[in-house]
Length: 139
Image 1 (cartoon, one colour):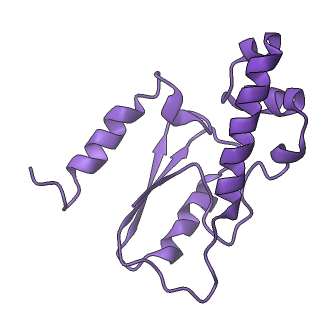
Image 2 (cartoon, helix red, strand yellow):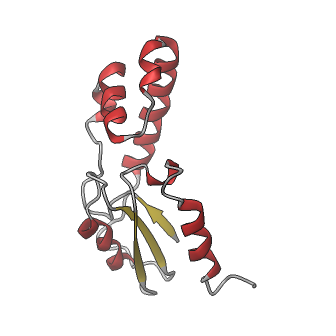
């Protein structure tokens, strides 16, 4: 199971305050994190559409949970955390280990919260390497 930029339960999900913000405030917060282009601020109709999608994404993320009495998953976990991610410090990424019986590897990747979207990070190459090491890879 591949996970990235999100804390393990029962830790508080990041960006919990965003759905309540108005479109401009939400955009400015995401721009500051590198997750949205400032160009959207000049186009209110695009900004509204983007803000609605972000709110829906956050609702889905915040609705996920792991009950304290649930058994750990019987699959290995690979967790990705940006080295400069203000929302998911490495210690919070490591907390995923308690949710598996098959091992948990935490991979630090350069970048912030949106490291997967930053071409300079080269995340596809990192992901390809991890997947090629998988015991499920038919090689």
